[in-house]
Length: 444
Image (cartoon, rainbow, N blue to C red; front, side, top):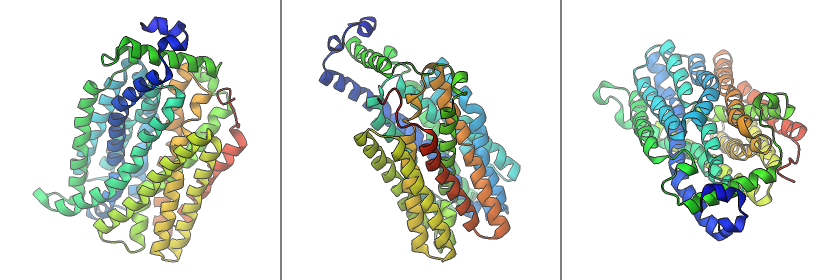
């Protein structure tokens, strides 16, 4: 059976449900492990600066304000290049685009080992963001070519959860690299951290060209009948969803589009705080040994990974997205408020608990949130819309580290900054209930 016939024939002609299940399991096992590895490496290289900061700042005589600006400027590059990157994926295909993205940020990460001035730091962090731009929304778009919505939720949850897994494993790994490589070959531990963690990304980028296939019709590892299974389900879903906005510029006139951007902006504010200042907050309450601190942060981020999987499971089981996103964001905000309180009390156990709670809530909101845009957008609107939502919202990752760094430098403590960001994150919950409707055409 060829693909054209599959678009017009009734579903039984394209195989039974069980037969299609086998086809889609094959697709998932072919694609998801590799793109999940890519996302894992992206997060390792994006946030290792949070651990490098523990000794890098004193070696280079930098202030928290310099670090906050450098950590945040990553998202300026991310913002500028994310939409062009997603359009490039649509035009040139996933394997070439993901290869470019991964090799580019890997080389930039390695070059971070030789940074000496704040200007060099800012430039390389900007380039890191510019290269990584488009990866997450690009993979989300890529999966829409292969999997219908009812098969995409769990796959997307596994992919997105790699960010939390990278923090769970990356924190103790970064600590051990810095500890064991200190002084090796005349380099500092933080320099070896960037070199050792940047090289695997370069290798993975080269592998992407050979391991990824752009579209089902190009997959030599699928039979014509299996390709028909994919086409049949995607066509059936497209008809079931009914009319959706195809024009990106028309979607910009929708309050719902801006609500989605604002909601994700607030969630990312909390996430960026946990990622870039989590180690510093834990160090503030007495965990000064780098290896111990690494294991503590690994445990905190493990709660974030658990939150992603649990909230994704509950959302799929209940067939509900809106409330699951809102409640998770509220839990993340409460965790940040508690962290500010326990920092004031000098309670190490309290701070660790609060950060774990915030991690579970904040990270748990992210994969569920990404189920929302596809219910309202299609065609060019979804290609550009995913990138715009992610890029504009990730500007929060620029402002929140700078805000926290500035307030720490001027007040000498983190409490005010954490409280401010907690309020911002809680606004995500408020906006979801105020502006995101309970149902869409796809949900009825």
